[in-house]
Amino acid sequence: MTLVYAVILMTGVIGNICTCIVIARNRYMHTATNYYLFSLAVSDLLLLILGLPQELYQLWYKYPYVFGEAFCILRGLTSEMSTNASILTITAFTVERYVAICHPFRAQTMSHLPRAVKTILCIWTVAALCALPTALQFGIKYEFDDNGDTLWDTALCGVIKPLPHTFEISTCLFFVLPIVLISVLYVLIGIRLRQGSIGNRADNLSNCNKQKMNSRKAVVKMLSK
Figure: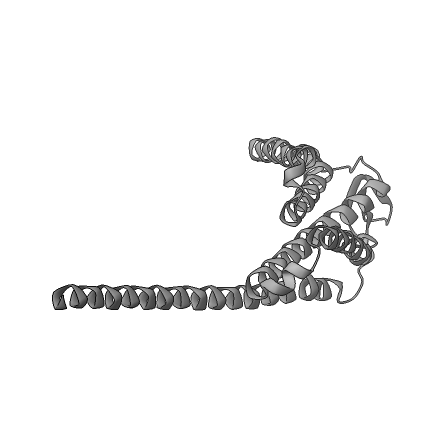
């Protein structure tokens, strides 16, 4: 597991940093699509840098938790916020694709880049606010001996103040609803692309028939002469 975690951390950090650098340095890549990819890369970096090293350390030294309660809460906040931001970014990107394919005229009248920037800022704001209830549940918890005394060496970062129905609400808002919306939009995109393909085939067939008719008329004229 140490080797697996190390490989994931190294490749994930390098890959996402390269993605951010390439998009930031090349002006021709400053498009709405690439801005969404930039947002995804940032969320992955937060999850990797603030979460995976701690998990790697705890593989070898689970007790006691040495990073402190503040970092425990921060870890819960960043982990939940990054996950929420990733899901919302993918959903927003899907909506962009749907508008571009199914409503191209409306997409052309809207400014893609400024709208994408505002959407990404809103996504991170919503992701952070919705991550707060989950993060506030975290803290340092301890085991107790038979006499009720605290065993300080058993310090562990975990949920100490559970809020009712937090998990169910989060699952509904950031998993069930996005999955349903994304699925519906991709079905509509597929239907539109299929209709366009059938329409193109019909147009090509009509043009082919017209060419055949014109060729036949030309041959008849030549023969009549």
